[in-house]
Length: 122
Image (cartoon, rainbow, N blue to C red):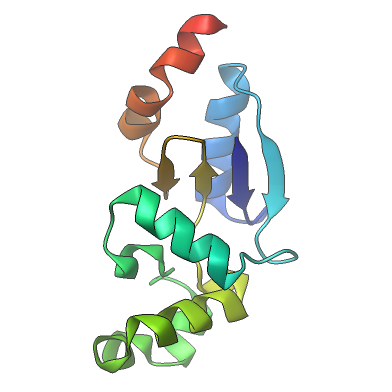
């Protein structure tokens, strides 16, 4: 599993603590220093089953500075993927990437449900 986060983000810190407290093994990736590629984002989006808008960090400074609230609806999907890949701080975090699922953001109940089999093995 890969865990993409921004170390200063409190939501990422909560998610990482949740994983660590349960002994879940993951590869840590700082989303600001190593932002996802367009190909990765496309693959993760397809596996997540979520609308592409859910991959945007709508609370972020970059999102607001670029006025994406108004611009996103007019952008093509290709343009949105290119934009997301241009700056890791535009991507909602944390991202938990597994072979059979992708979780965007941190909701404890969702983590528990998706990681049930991994948690039972520990």
